[in-house]
Image (cartoon, rainbow, N blue to C red; front, side, top):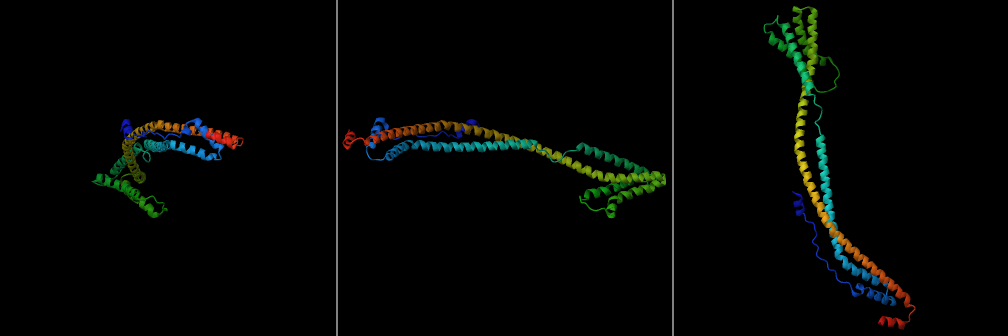
Length: 325
């Protein structure tokens, strides 16, 4: 919605009817008559407070409509200020949301290159290990290719299964645990060692045994960790992609809302500014009326006090003559 539509849909300029107060009594409208009234009151025995209260009552009736207008304008301006505050707070909240979303990052850190490099290295080790087992078993078995692959998988997958299925618990070391972790890698390595002894020297066969055993142990523990890291890397990439899509969608929606709220706030401010001249006019009229009231009361009191001070110096006959005139 444009600024003009916002402004037209929320007219706030008050439609106050032209106020025509009742005219003041003649003795209040004319300063000379006011002095005469005060002098007569001063020469009598009537109290001053009754007359000054009457003056205040007349002026209160004069300004009652202005008081009502000031109250209505104050309430309206208060409502507009509240609307401005609420919308401004919402704008600030949306800007903070945008800032937080722009700074948001997926959990963890990606190590994709490092993980892939490690997996490729492990795959190379497994391939080399396969050919080592193949050459060792070739003189003894016709189907040595498939057999060597099975031996390789047995030695590797035994510890791999233990690593991927075990939970992170701190259990004390035991022989049973040692056999569970290293039993199958040891058995496969010892199987190859037996046939290596028949075709190679004892030292070479021992070297093959130790190499295969520790390779099975290392790769069997390393690959599950690398696969978990790769899974985390893919999860990170997926979260990063989702976060980017969320950032694009929500940022656009929030910015559109901010623009709409800004237009609305500007329109409300204009409505408030339109009310201020009316409020200033009412305040001016009230100030003028109150000032005029205070001046008249002061004039009345001065004339009253002067007449009251002369009353004791005059005779009853002189007072009646003054009152009659």
